[in-house]
Image (cartoon, helix red, strand yellow):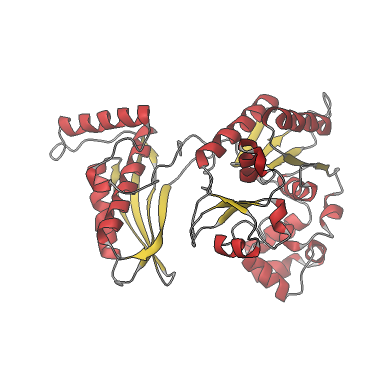
Length: 404
């Protein structure tokens, strides 16, 4: 059976959502992202791109390049609701699909040619998404994920493209090497030094040369340049770790502020574990100083999801890690080595009153929101909540106000 993989991508997703909410923003230059000097452009409209603005750019630079642009902080919860609408339509329409990000999907249409015609079916599904959600969306259709993703990029904005079987290599050849998935900034720099600018040049290079220069990654680049890819669809994303970070608007050594943030992070992540019946076996703390040097420290622990175990451990790791006495730019907490199960009480240290307290607190959070109840030591830490279940099998959303 001939494989047929569909790739769908919502065009300038955050911008499109904001325009649906406020029609006055239509056809106006729009930036979505952090509002402060350290904010990052999470999404930008096509009207801003002719000024050199792109996603991931510092908001300060983007504002300077396009001063007439409207800047919106954005709301992750709102974008998730729009994304869920699209997800439901795709779920109803195809047998197997993968949600690789909040605005990007893959679907396996293999075998549907004999009944509907894959391209026709994909076109009808795209039209349904446009009609029912109002969100512009593009798609690419080919025999594998890589070629379909590149085809979607070539089809944008708000269009569609099909690459027939056997024409994958010919389609990729004239394209710039940066359009090939897995070629990032560093890899592109090395390829440029080798005189490689188009995918066709990679197609003509010996595989051994790329392997000697890039190792196993070189084989991946060469295979994808040939239009070859066997990556399977991943319907469910199993989380192996959960984490949260906070970048301060102004570098600080205020220990009260730092500890408040860390306590709120540790407590919220522990609640996420308990809500999904998970436990962590490793805790790590991250610090980024004002000179951008970043350090992490971790410690293995008996599997747990209890606040009274995790919060003191986070404080202990931070105290031992913070030894430069410099201004801090960012702090973060990560729980890894996650397994399923419930917290096993300590026969000597725990009591029934403490366990009942956790259950009561979690019931309040489940009903009124994860930020509705917190310890006094975590008061004052804003926007620590995740706004969703990290163990629901969906990829994490990049918050629109994420900072550098």
